[in-house]
Amino acid sequence: MRVIATMTSKGQVTVPREVREKLGLKQGDGLVFEIEGNTITLLTPQEDNPFDAFIGTLPPLPQDARSFWRERRDGDGDE
Figure (spheres, rainbow, N blue to C red):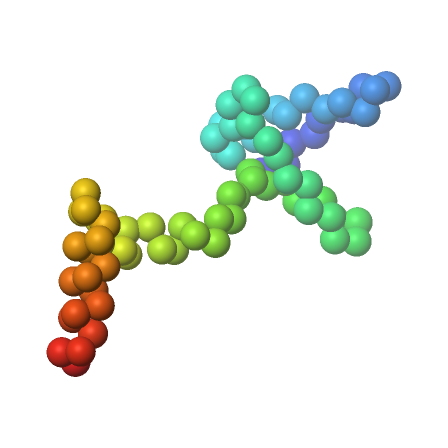
């Protein structure tokens, strides 16, 4: 898809409807401009949270944290 937009005197560009729809952009969304030589790539920002990979990997903590850690500590000797 090739779409042309015009820049205003303030350096503003309206993202054409076709592009907004293709990228799923809504009011208030951010954009990433990736520049390589004379090529500019427009991307939606991806939140890179290094902790996302760990979500759901730990067991839920019980109300009594002491019993939780006691069980963990006692279980280490069984292996």
